[in-house]
Image (cartoon, rainbow, N blue to C red; front, side, top):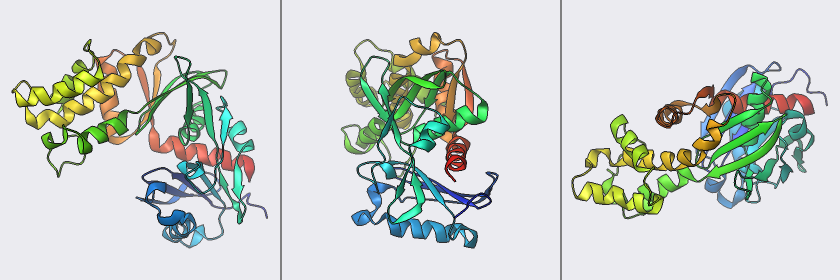
Length: 307
């Protein structure tokens, strides 16, 4: 079957959520759906039922459209393990390594990428490789340092379109664990789901992150500071956010400072705002790239290669 002029369903399917776009043959968005259907929320791994729901939500044009997916749906805990490529970052390499579902050959899953971190340790990413490939293809970038914030923030060095280092920081996950399941939890209002608009508190957290005794001490210092009146309780969540992000960035700032070009920051919404403040605090030059557009562009470009 030829899909040359067909609509395409592009899905970024992660651990906690799912984003799906219905794209026309030129990559324009005809419809969009997002929901809390991450692989950790799918009972009995009934991913087929979720995919059926997504197709219905995207409308009549989505019926029988080929589907390209990236993210944790291709992990060992997902629908089918798509494996990892070695240090490959380009659209062509990812497209050549996609797998399809045996029960539905018009559904493809993009593999993840395996590399080594800036300090020589093994590291992997799944989902971010598609956003990265989308940035490189749409922006015509072949080298540089990329920051992809998230539950597990990725810092990726690229040279000649190949990954030279991949360093992951569990920033978002540590923030959520401390907020919900730690001795710090009572400091935060139950109804407050995200980070409050407290720039001063966030900056205070960034400053706290540079302390000599390290993150394990600094986390308790947030609690002690609230209890003794050093910090305002209303700023507690923003301080924790600044501490988590600051702990990440201070360890990568030296690498960023050696780059000949600004760091490419792939983010949107609140995350873009927070990381821009953090980059300014640590004197990191950056270029902001829309995070939503990058994943969508990567999926579309990979689909064009395989359809």
